[in-house]
Length: 131
Image (cartoon, rainbow, N blue to C red; front, side, top):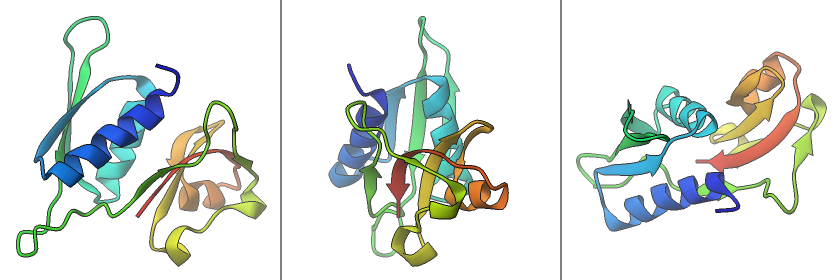
């Protein structure tokens, strides 16, 4: 697999389109941090790290509106790819959906959202957009 983050986002996207409640993805430290951010910002209901085998898995419970059965995540878009990395400085921080969505960045101080990176005046690699 050449792009594990794109695979992670695709698994989430497919589970949402299929209407699944829980999705399992292979674990890595970067995926754990992205999952933590999605939970903190209210895009997923809960998550659990399962240590089985050498790699482990992440079980993610997706968040749906109880009335309309609409998922909290409308779009997951991969920005930086292995073939074309996308880096931004804190002055050029992207605004996703005019501030309603988030961009997840990998910075020198760890993985964080665009708003947190802007507050700390950090730039980094833009991993994905979520709204």
